[in-house]
Image 1 (cartoon, one colour):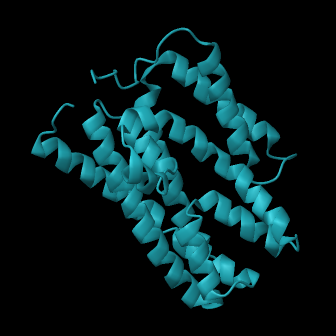
Image 2 (cartoon, rainbow, N blue to C red):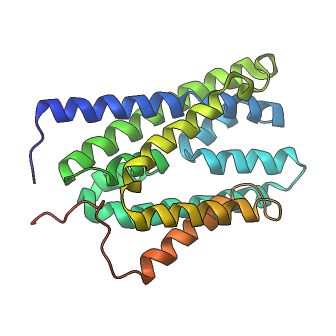
Length: 235
């Protein structure tokens, strides 16, 4: 496996911590929304610790807030969480961990850690990006969740502070390097069009899955390799 230079490692960790800070801070919103829905502080923190996938967590409390049954909320959260399974299929051969290390890594397979891994030029760099991003988001997200839950209704809607915009900006920064290829640009436009088209007729979160379906379909039908992918290293 290719060794990383200290400068490259520092650069990856710095970028990863930036993503972790931007994303983790939004946990304040989840904590505040969850207690406003009726969950206790302990229940709110347990969700962030065990479930740890923001979209699914928001989907669950959203269903509960709308008066839905807990089972309906759990199924909605499960549906949104299926994308992490697809991430795992891509990350497993890239990161090459087994046993307990793979089990521990599986808990932090989220959008951000995946994006900060697949954009790297070697497996060693992908591992650093994955670990630094995944665990920084985990620590900060759970800390922010606790703060938001304790602040409760006194905090108001955290979106008024612009935290939701920070998450979107982080995602755009992660996506940008993959748009160097013309095919990827067209896939991004098509996925965005599909997501926007289904927003009025499907529950929140489903447009993301619809957009991911576009990318998966193109990937399955295309025979041309993605030039932005990490080249396979000798085992």
